[in-house]
Length: 487
Image (cartoon, rainbow, N blue to C red; front, side):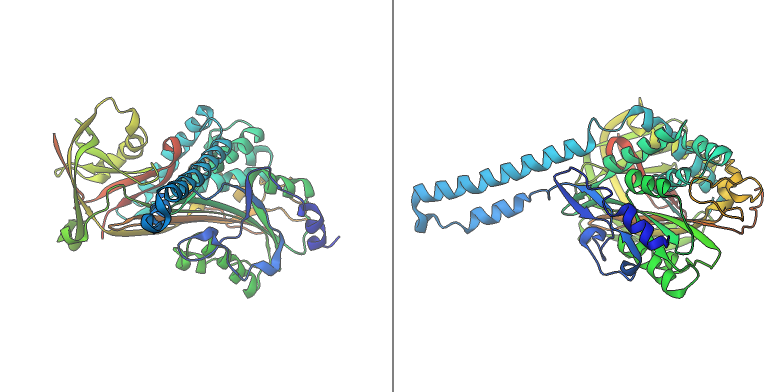
Protein backbone atom coordinates (compact mmCIF):
# COMPACT_ATOMS: atom_id res chain seq x y z
CA UNK A 1 0.00 0.00 0.00
CA UNK A 2 1.39 3.44 -0.85
CA UNK A 3 2.52 5.12 2.34
CA UNK A 4 0.49 8.32 1.86
CA UNK A 5 -2.71 6.35 1.39
CA UNK A 6 -1.95 4.12 4.35
CA UNK A 7 -1.17 6.99 6.68
CA UNK A 8 -4.11 9.06 5.54
CA UNK A 9 -6.48 6.23 6.40
CA UNK A 10 -4.72 5.57 9.67
CA UNK A 11 -4.40 9.07 11.05
CA UNK A 12 -7.44 10.83 9.63
CA UNK A 13 -9.47 10.37 12.79
CA UNK A 14 -6.68 10.44 15.37
CA UNK A 15 -6.59 12.90 18.25
CA UNK A 16 -10.11 14.39 18.24
CA UNK A 17 -9.76 15.24 21.89
CA UNK A 18 -12.70 16.11 24.11
CA UNK A 19 -11.33 19.41 25.33
CA UNK A 20 -13.05 22.78 25.24
CA UNK A 21 -11.56 23.60 21.85
CA UNK A 22 -8.94 22.24 19.51
CA UNK A 23 -6.17 23.93 17.59
CA UNK A 24 -4.17 22.34 14.81
CA UNK A 25 -0.48 21.80 15.33
CA UNK A 26 1.58 23.18 12.54
CA UNK A 27 2.64 26.51 13.88
CA UNK A 28 2.60 30.04 12.79
CA UNK A 29 5.34 32.56 12.34
CA UNK A 30 6.97 35.41 14.17
CA UNK A 31 6.36 35.73 17.88
CA UNK A 32 3.44 33.32 18.07
CA UNK A 33 4.11 29.89 16.54
CA UNK A 34 0.53 28.82 17.24
CA UNK A 35 -1.01 31.57 15.15
CA UNK A 36 -1.27 29.44 12.03
CA UNK A 37 0.90 29.73 8.96
CA UNK A 38 1.33 28.67 5.38
CA UNK A 39 4.50 26.62 5.59
CA UNK A 40 5.88 24.75 2.60
CA UNK A 41 5.43 21.51 4.58
CA UNK A 42 1.64 21.47 4.20
CA UNK A 43 1.54 19.54 0.93
CA UNK A 44 3.33 16.61 2.62
CA UNK A 45 1.04 16.48 5.62
CA UNK A 46 -0.92 13.25 5.91
CA UNK A 47 -2.62 14.18 9.18
CA UNK A 48 -2.96 17.39 11.15
CA UNK A 49 -2.93 16.37 14.80
CA UNK A 50 -5.46 18.12 17.02
CA UNK A 51 -3.94 19.53 20.17
CA UNK A 52 -5.78 20.04 23.45
CA UNK A 53 -6.36 23.75 23.80
CA UNK A 54 -8.09 26.10 26.16
CA UNK A 55 -10.14 29.26 25.65
CA UNK A 56 -8.13 32.45 25.37
CA UNK A 57 -7.53 34.03 28.76
CA UNK A 58 -9.68 37.17 28.92
CA UNK A 59 -7.82 40.46 29.18
CA UNK A 60 -8.78 42.78 32.00
CA UNK A 61 -7.42 45.64 29.92
CA UNK A 62 -10.27 44.95 27.48
CA UNK A 63 -12.70 45.24 30.38
CA UNK A 64 -11.24 48.57 31.43
CA UNK A 65 -11.46 49.86 27.87
CA UNK A 66 -15.08 48.72 27.55
CA UNK A 67 -16.02 50.39 30.82
CA UNK A 68 -14.22 53.58 29.83
CA UNK A 69 -16.19 53.65 26.58
CA UNK A 70 -19.52 53.86 28.45
CA UNK A 71 -20.97 57.37 28.63
CA UNK A 72 -22.68 57.82 32.00
CA UNK A 73 -24.31 61.12 31.01
CA UNK A 74 -25.76 59.67 27.84
CA UNK A 75 -26.88 56.31 29.29
CA UNK A 76 -28.17 57.42 32.66
CA UNK A 77 -27.54 55.68 35.96
CA UNK A 78 -29.73 52.61 35.46
CA UNK A 79 -28.55 51.76 31.96
CA UNK A 80 -24.93 52.59 32.80
CA UNK A 81 -25.06 50.22 35.79
CA UNK A 82 -26.68 47.48 33.68
CA UNK A 83 -24.07 47.79 30.92
CA UNK A 84 -21.23 47.84 33.44
CA UNK A 85 -22.56 44.72 35.15
CA UNK A 86 -22.92 42.96 31.80
CA UNK A 87 -19.29 43.68 30.93
CA UNK A 88 -18.09 42.40 34.30
CA UNK A 89 -20.33 39.31 34.19
CA UNK A 90 -19.06 38.46 30.70
CA UNK A 91 -15.47 38.80 31.91
CA UNK A 92 -16.18 36.61 34.95
CA UNK A 93 -17.69 33.86 32.77
CA UNK A 94 -14.74 33.87 30.38
CA UNK A 95 -12.28 33.85 33.27
CA UNK A 96 -14.12 30.95 34.89
CA UNK A 97 -14.13 28.98 31.61
CA UNK A 98 -10.41 29.61 31.21
CA UNK A 99 -9.60 28.46 34.74
CA UNK A 100 -11.75 25.35 34.41
CA UNK A 101 -10.04 24.45 31.13
CA UNK A 102 -6.62 24.86 32.72
CA UNK A 103 -7.62 22.58 35.59
CA UNK A 104 -8.90 20.01 33.09
CA UNK A 105 -5.66 20.25 31.12
CA UNK A 106 -3.23 20.05 34.02
CA UNK A 107 -5.16 17.74 36.33
CA UNK A 108 -3.44 17.52 39.71
CA UNK A 109 -0.25 19.09 38.39
CA UNK A 110 3.11 17.44 37.91
CA UNK A 111 3.18 13.92 39.32
CA UNK A 112 6.15 13.57 41.72
CA UNK A 113 6.90 10.23 40.06
CA UNK A 114 7.55 12.18 36.86
CA UNK A 115 9.18 15.24 38.42
CA UNK A 116 11.99 13.18 39.98
CA UNK A 117 13.11 11.55 36.70
CA UNK A 118 12.87 14.90 34.89
CA UNK A 119 15.10 16.61 37.45
CA UNK A 120 17.59 13.74 37.29
CA UNK A 121 17.62 13.86 33.49
CA UNK A 122 18.20 17.62 33.57
CA UNK A 123 21.10 17.26 36.00
CA UNK A 124 22.78 14.47 34.02
CA UNK A 125 22.40 15.96 30.56
CA UNK A 126 23.13 19.58 31.48
CA UNK A 127 26.22 18.60 33.45
CA UNK A 128 27.52 16.70 30.42
CA UNK A 129 26.71 19.52 27.99
CA UNK A 130 28.10 22.23 30.27
CA UNK A 131 31.25 20.15 30.81
CA UNK A 132 31.86 19.83 27.07
CA UNK A 133 31.18 23.54 26.47
CA UNK A 134 32.77 24.91 29.65
CA UNK A 135 33.97 28.22 28.21
CA UNK A 136 31.20 28.75 25.67
CA UNK A 137 27.68 30.14 25.73
CA UNK A 138 25.02 27.45 26.07
CA UNK A 139 21.26 27.48 25.55
CA UNK A 140 19.73 24.06 26.21
CA UNK A 141 16.15 22.88 26.77
CA UNK A 142 15.95 19.75 28.95
CA UNK A 143 12.18 19.63 28.37
CA UNK A 144 12.64 19.57 24.60
CA UNK A 145 15.33 16.87 24.56
CA UNK A 146 13.32 14.80 27.03
CA UNK A 147 10.28 14.87 24.76
CA UNK A 148 12.36 13.94 21.70
CA UNK A 149 13.93 10.97 23.48
CA UNK A 150 10.50 9.83 24.66
CA UNK A 151 9.44 9.67 21.00
CA UNK A 152 12.63 7.78 20.17
CA UNK A 153 11.69 5.19 22.80
CA UNK A 154 8.46 4.56 20.89
CA UNK A 155 10.30 3.53 17.71
CA UNK A 156 12.95 1.37 19.41
CA UNK A 157 12.90 -1.84 21.43
CA UNK A 158 15.11 -4.16 23.44
CA UNK A 159 18.40 -2.80 24.77
CA UNK A 160 18.16 0.22 22.45
CA UNK A 161 14.99 1.33 24.23
CA UNK A 162 16.28 0.32 27.67
CA UNK A 163 19.34 2.57 27.37
CA UNK A 164 17.19 5.58 26.48
CA UNK A 165 14.70 4.88 29.28
CA UNK A 166 17.55 4.60 31.77
CA UNK A 167 18.66 8.15 30.93
CA UNK A 168 15.04 9.33 31.13
CA UNK A 169 14.68 7.69 34.55
CA UNK A 170 11.72 5.56 33.39
CA UNK A 171 11.05 1.85 33.60
CA UNK A 172 8.73 0.93 30.75
CA UNK A 173 7.06 2.32 27.64
CA UNK A 174 3.82 3.03 29.52
CA UNK A 175 5.75 5.37 31.83
CA UNK A 176 7.37 7.00 28.79
CA UNK A 177 3.97 7.75 27.24
CA UNK A 178 2.56 9.03 30.52
CA UNK A 179 5.59 11.25 31.11
CA UNK A 180 5.38 12.77 27.62
CA UNK A 181 1.73 13.61 28.30
CA UNK A 182 2.57 15.10 31.71
CA UNK A 183 5.30 17.22 30.15
CA UNK A 184 3.04 18.60 27.42
CA UNK A 185 -0.02 19.26 29.59
CA UNK A 186 1.84 20.90 32.46
CA UNK A 187 4.14 23.11 30.42
CA UNK A 188 1.58 24.27 27.85
CA UNK A 189 0.64 27.93 28.20
CA UNK A 190 -0.91 30.24 25.66
CA UNK A 191 -1.91 33.64 26.97
CA UNK A 192 -1.51 37.16 25.73
CA UNK A 193 2.19 37.87 26.22
CA UNK A 194 2.97 34.53 27.91
CA UNK A 195 3.52 31.33 25.94
CA UNK A 196 5.08 27.91 26.35
CA UNK A 197 4.25 25.91 23.22
CA UNK A 198 5.43 22.40 22.37
CA UNK A 199 5.13 20.69 18.97
CA UNK A 200 6.21 17.29 17.63
CA UNK A 201 6.36 15.76 14.17
CA UNK A 202 7.40 12.61 12.34
CA UNK A 203 8.82 12.77 8.81
CA UNK A 204 8.37 9.48 6.99
CA UNK A 205 10.13 8.26 3.87
CA UNK A 206 7.34 7.88 1.32
CA UNK A 207 8.90 4.72 -0.09
CA UNK A 208 8.86 2.79 3.20
CA UNK A 209 6.04 0.75 4.69
CA UNK A 210 5.88 1.77 8.35
CA UNK A 211 4.12 -0.14 11.11
CA UNK A 212 0.69 1.37 11.58
CA UNK A 213 0.45 0.77 15.32
CA UNK A 214 3.64 2.69 16.08
CA UNK A 215 2.64 5.61 13.86
CA UNK A 216 -0.69 5.74 15.67
CA UNK A 217 1.01 5.75 19.09
CA UNK A 218 3.29 8.64 18.06
CA UNK A 219 0.22 10.63 17.06
CA UNK A 220 -1.87 9.76 20.13
CA UNK A 221 0.73 9.94 22.89
CA UNK A 222 3.10 12.62 21.61
CA UNK A 223 0.82 14.82 19.49
CA UNK A 224 3.15 14.17 16.55
CA UNK A 225 1.91 15.37 13.16
CA UNK A 226 2.77 13.09 10.23
CA UNK A 227 4.47 14.05 6.96
CA UNK A 228 5.24 11.68 4.10
CA UNK A 229 8.17 12.98 2.08
CA UNK A 230 10.72 12.10 -0.60
CA UNK A 231 13.90 12.01 1.46
CA UNK A 232 17.03 13.67 0.16
CA UNK A 233 15.25 16.27 -1.96
CA UNK A 234 15.63 20.03 -1.59
CA UNK A 235 11.89 20.58 -1.17
CA UNK A 236 11.76 18.10 1.71
CA UNK A 237 14.57 19.85 3.54
CA UNK A 238 12.86 23.21 2.99
CA UNK A 239 9.59 21.82 4.33
CA UNK A 240 11.28 20.42 7.44
CA UNK A 241 13.02 23.74 8.10
CA UNK A 242 9.79 25.67 7.57
CA UNK A 243 7.95 23.51 10.11
CA UNK A 244 10.71 24.07 12.69
CA UNK A 245 10.85 27.82 12.04
CA UNK A 246 7.10 28.24 12.38
CA UNK A 247 7.07 26.35 15.68
CA UNK A 248 10.06 28.20 17.16
CA UNK A 249 9.05 31.74 16.26
CA UNK A 250 11.82 31.96 13.65
CA UNK A 251 14.44 32.15 16.42
CA UNK A 252 16.53 29.24 15.13
CA UNK A 253 16.64 29.79 11.38
CA UNK A 254 20.41 29.32 11.12
CA UNK A 255 20.38 26.02 13.01
CA UNK A 256 17.32 24.77 11.12
CA UNK A 257 18.94 25.83 7.85
CA UNK A 258 21.71 23.28 8.31
CA UNK A 259 19.31 20.32 8.55
CA UNK A 260 19.35 17.98 5.57
CA UNK A 261 17.91 14.59 4.75
CA UNK A 262 19.39 12.13 2.27
CA UNK A 263 17.92 9.26 0.24
CA UNK A 264 18.99 6.83 3.00
CA UNK A 265 17.00 8.70 5.67
CA UNK A 266 14.04 6.56 6.69
CA UNK A 267 12.55 8.62 9.52
CA UNK A 268 13.06 11.98 11.20
CA UNK A 269 11.58 12.75 14.62
CA UNK A 270 11.46 16.47 15.46
CA UNK A 271 10.39 18.20 18.67
CA UNK A 272 10.20 21.96 19.31
CA UNK A 273 9.50 24.30 22.20
CA UNK A 274 8.79 28.04 22.11
CA UNK A 275 8.70 30.26 25.18
CA UNK A 276 7.84 33.92 25.70
CA UNK A 277 7.04 35.82 28.88
CA UNK A 278 7.36 39.30 30.37
CA UNK A 279 8.97 40.28 33.65
CA UNK A 280 6.62 41.03 36.52
CA UNK A 281 8.59 44.23 36.95
CA UNK A 282 9.85 45.55 33.63
CA UNK A 283 13.29 47.11 33.49
CA UNK A 284 13.19 50.83 32.79
CA UNK A 285 15.31 51.51 29.65
CA UNK A 286 16.25 54.96 30.96
CA UNK A 287 18.13 53.27 33.83
CA UNK A 288 20.31 51.18 31.49
CA UNK A 289 24.05 51.70 31.73
CA UNK A 290 27.09 50.52 29.80
CA UNK A 291 29.69 48.53 31.68
CA UNK A 292 32.22 45.72 31.41
CA UNK A 293 31.28 42.06 31.25
CA UNK A 294 34.29 39.90 32.11
CA UNK A 295 34.25 36.77 29.96
CA UNK A 296 35.43 33.33 31.02
CA UNK A 297 38.79 33.99 29.36
CA UNK A 298 39.25 37.19 31.37
CA UNK A 299 38.59 39.57 28.49
CA UNK A 300 36.28 42.52 29.09
CA UNK A 301 33.52 43.60 26.71
CA UNK A 302 31.37 46.73 26.80
CA UNK A 303 27.82 45.59 27.51
CA UNK A 304 24.44 47.21 28.11
CA UNK A 305 23.15 46.44 31.62
CA UNK A 306 19.55 46.73 32.82
CA UNK A 307 18.90 47.76 36.43
CA UNK A 308 16.12 47.16 38.92
CA UNK A 309 15.95 47.08 42.72
CA UNK A 310 13.65 44.49 44.26
CA UNK A 311 12.81 45.44 47.84
CA UNK A 312 11.55 42.05 48.96
CA UNK A 313 13.22 39.64 46.56
CA UNK A 314 13.96 36.02 47.43
CA UNK A 315 17.50 34.75 47.19
CA UNK A 316 19.54 31.75 48.22
CA UNK A 317 23.08 32.51 49.35
CA UNK A 318 25.42 29.57 49.79
CA UNK A 319 28.50 29.52 51.98
CA UNK A 320 30.23 27.81 49.06
CA UNK A 321 30.65 31.11 47.26
CA UNK A 322 27.67 31.74 45.01
CA UNK A 323 24.25 33.38 45.05
CA UNK A 324 21.04 32.31 43.38
CA UNK A 325 18.10 34.64 42.86
CA UNK A 326 15.16 34.62 40.50
CA UNK A 327 13.29 37.18 38.45
CA UNK A 328 9.53 36.46 38.48
CA UNK A 329 7.55 36.55 35.24
CA UNK A 330 4.03 37.69 34.50
CA UNK A 331 2.67 34.15 34.10
CA UNK A 332 3.99 33.04 37.50
CA UNK A 333 7.07 31.33 36.03
CA UNK A 334 10.57 32.54 36.77
CA UNK A 335 14.13 32.86 35.52
CA UNK A 336 16.80 31.84 38.01
CA UNK A 337 20.40 33.02 37.97
CA UNK A 338 23.47 31.34 39.49
CA UNK A 339 26.22 33.92 40.11
CA UNK A 340 29.61 32.94 41.58
CA UNK A 341 31.28 35.35 43.98
CA UNK A 342 33.75 37.73 42.37
CA UNK A 343 36.75 35.62 43.39
CA UNK A 344 35.21 32.40 42.03
CA UNK A 345 34.72 31.02 38.52
CA UNK A 346 31.61 29.44 37.05
CA UNK A 347 33.75 26.61 35.67
CA UNK A 348 34.90 25.64 39.17
CA UNK A 349 31.32 25.10 40.31
CA UNK A 350 30.45 23.26 37.12
CA UNK A 351 33.36 20.87 37.69
CA UNK A 352 31.70 19.95 40.99
CA UNK A 353 28.28 19.70 39.32
CA UNK A 354 26.90 22.37 41.68
CA UNK A 355 25.33 24.65 39.09
CA UNK A 356 22.38 22.64 37.76
CA UNK A 357 21.67 20.92 41.06
CA UNK A 358 21.55 24.26 42.87
CA UNK A 359 19.31 25.86 40.24
CA UNK A 360 16.94 22.88 40.34
CA UNK A 361 16.73 22.80 44.14
CA UNK A 362 16.38 26.56 44.61
CA UNK A 363 12.78 26.32 45.90
CA UNK A 364 13.80 23.72 48.46
CA UNK A 365 16.86 25.63 49.63
CA UNK A 366 16.76 25.90 53.44
CA UNK A 367 18.68 29.18 53.23
CA UNK A 368 16.21 31.05 51.04
CA UNK A 369 15.91 34.57 52.42
CA UNK A 370 14.19 37.81 51.61
CA UNK A 371 16.19 40.93 51.00
CA UNK A 372 16.73 43.95 48.82
CA UNK A 373 18.16 42.69 45.55
CA UNK A 374 19.96 45.13 43.30
CA UNK A 375 19.78 43.61 39.86
CA UNK A 376 22.29 44.49 37.13
CA UNK A 377 21.44 42.23 34.22
CA UNK A 378 23.14 42.29 30.83
CA UNK A 379 20.88 42.17 27.81
CA UNK A 380 21.90 38.93 26.13
CA UNK A 381 21.07 36.68 23.22
CA UNK A 382 22.60 33.23 23.74
CA UNK A 383 22.32 30.39 21.25
CA UNK A 384 23.98 27.05 20.69
CA UNK A 385 23.82 24.25 18.17
CA UNK A 386 24.77 20.94 19.80
CA UNK A 387 25.66 17.64 18.13
CA UNK A 388 24.13 15.23 20.65
CA UNK A 389 25.47 11.94 19.26
CA UNK A 390 28.76 11.98 21.12
CA UNK A 391 27.22 13.41 24.28
CA UNK A 392 24.49 10.76 24.43
CA UNK A 393 27.12 8.12 23.76
CA UNK A 394 28.94 9.39 26.87
CA UNK A 395 25.69 8.93 28.79
CA UNK A 396 25.49 5.25 27.74
CA UNK A 397 22.98 5.57 24.91
CA UNK A 398 24.96 3.53 22.38
CA UNK A 399 23.03 0.75 20.69
CA UNK A 400 20.94 3.12 18.53
CA UNK A 401 24.14 4.25 16.74
CA UNK A 402 25.45 0.74 16.02
CA UNK A 403 24.00 -1.18 13.07
CA UNK A 404 24.92 -4.45 14.77
CA UNK A 405 22.86 -3.76 17.90
CA UNK A 406 20.27 -1.05 17.06
CA UNK A 407 16.67 -2.23 17.39
CA UNK A 408 14.07 -0.19 15.49
CA UNK A 409 11.67 -3.09 14.99
CA UNK A 410 8.59 -1.16 16.25
CA UNK A 411 8.69 1.29 13.33
CA UNK A 412 9.66 -0.77 10.26
CA UNK A 413 11.15 -4.05 9.07
CA UNK A 414 13.87 -3.52 6.48
CA UNK A 415 16.53 -5.69 4.93
CA UNK A 416 19.16 -3.24 6.23
CA UNK A 417 19.54 -2.32 9.89
CA UNK A 418 18.23 1.09 10.96
CA UNK A 419 20.40 3.34 13.10
CA UNK A 420 20.32 6.93 14.36
CA UNK A 421 22.50 8.87 11.93
CA UNK A 422 22.25 12.31 13.53
CA UNK A 423 20.87 14.03 16.63
CA UNK A 424 20.95 17.82 16.79
CA UNK A 425 19.76 20.08 19.61
CA UNK A 426 19.60 23.82 18.99
CA UNK A 427 18.54 26.40 21.55
CA UNK A 428 18.32 30.15 21.92
CA UNK A 429 17.47 32.40 24.90
CA UNK A 430 17.34 36.19 24.75
CA UNK A 431 16.29 38.79 27.30
CA UNK A 432 15.65 42.53 27.23
CA UNK A 433 13.77 45.13 29.28
CA UNK A 434 10.39 43.57 28.48
CA UNK A 435 11.08 39.92 29.23
CA UNK A 436 12.43 36.69 27.79
CA UNK A 437 11.95 34.81 24.52
CA UNK A 438 13.42 31.35 23.94
CA UNK A 439 13.13 28.37 21.61
CA UNK A 440 14.71 24.98 21.02
CA UNK A 441 14.39 22.02 18.70
CA UNK A 442 15.71 18.48 18.68
CA UNK A 443 15.95 16.54 15.42
CA UNK A 444 16.65 12.82 15.30
CA UNK A 445 17.49 11.29 11.91
CA UNK A 446 17.09 7.54 11.47
CA UNK A 447 18.55 5.84 8.43
CA UNK A 448 20.46 2.82 7.18
CA UNK A 449 24.00 4.18 7.55
CA UNK A 450 25.86 5.66 10.48
CA UNK A 451 29.29 6.58 11.79
CA UNK A 452 29.95 5.48 15.35
CA UNK A 453 30.50 8.43 17.67
CA UNK A 454 33.87 8.67 19.41
CA UNK A 455 34.00 7.56 23.03
CA UNK A 456 34.44 10.78 24.57
CA UNK A 457 20.87 41.54 53.27
CA UNK A 458 21.65 43.52 50.26
CA UNK A 459 22.33 41.09 47.56
CA UNK A 460 23.92 42.39 44.41
CA UNK A 461 23.12 40.27 41.39
CA UNK A 462 25.57 42.11 39.16
CA UNK A 463 25.82 39.69 36.27
CA UNK A 464 29.02 41.21 34.91
CA UNK A 465 30.89 37.90 34.78
CA UNK A 466 30.08 34.34 33.67
CA UNK A 467 26.80 33.07 35.11
CA UNK A 468 24.28 30.32 34.58
CA UNK A 469 20.51 30.54 34.26
CA UNK A 470 17.40 28.39 34.27
CA UNK A 471 13.84 29.12 33.14
CA UNK A 472 11.33 27.02 35.05
CA UNK A 473 7.79 26.09 34.12
CA UNK A 474 4.91 24.72 36.17
CA UNK A 475 6.00 23.18 39.48
CA UNK A 476 9.62 24.05 38.69
CA UNK A 477 9.88 21.94 35.53
CA UNK A 478 13.12 23.00 33.78
CA UNK A 479 12.31 24.56 30.40
CA UNK A 480 15.67 26.07 29.48
CA UNK A 481 19.06 26.27 31.14
CA UNK A 482 22.38 27.65 30.00
CA UNK A 483 25.54 29.55 30.65
CA UNK A 484 26.68 33.02 29.60
CA UNK A 485 30.47 33.00 29.43
CA UNK A 486 30.86 35.85 26.97
CA UNK A 487 28.78 38.60 25.47
